[in-house]
Length: 262
Image 1: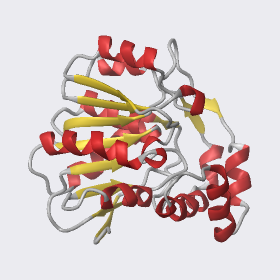
Image 2 (image 1 turned 90 degrees about the horizontal axis):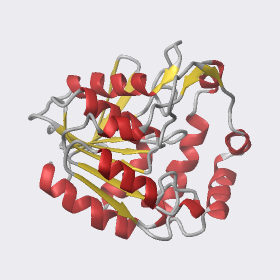
Image 3 (image 1 turned 45 degrees about the horizontal axis):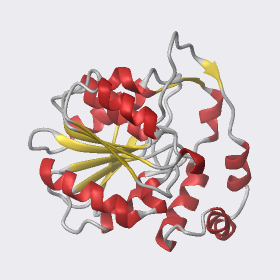
Image 4 (image 1 turned 180 degrees about the horizontal axis):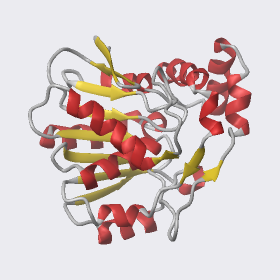
């Protein structure tokens, strides 16, 4: 799927071909760029770029606090180094969605439109660097061999397509454990970021009862806060990984948006 691989500084990135990418993909916490391959395969002909976040996949890990602004700057560094024809559409999931929102707010020269798959809502008030630790579920999965990790993923999410399970399982073992020796700073409110984004935004979320971070009520608040064109899509029956829970409906929403702006 990814025919071109490279590095920019500490960051590993992947392109589908030598041509300038039209869409960039930013993954969520504990995933990797390879986790986007199944959905990219569902859009034949798309020229895609995917980036391993710091401490994930094959990217390095600078010794500094973990914050969304750093993920934003990492994405900007890679995008600025790539062949491009004007701005690019950026698609992000969870952690990657918040990084994409930060990027769209601060670098409109790089971002033509942005897709946010179930980003965190952020926290109001002052933000401080706080110690954090590896989530127990991740430690448990990382302790398994690859076949057992795949089996665990299938047990946890039996409705996911089979081609999602191996990249998900591989990515868990690639998370740099030194990530949890660093301090973490949470994001500010997503609504504040949307008030600074002037390009088109597509927000895709699921059901909070299934683990979605965005509720229908919060999506309405996002629509009210957005400075530019904004559309929220609720895909019923899905959780935090909307595209894995219902790829068909996810692509039905994503593909026309990309066709319009890429």
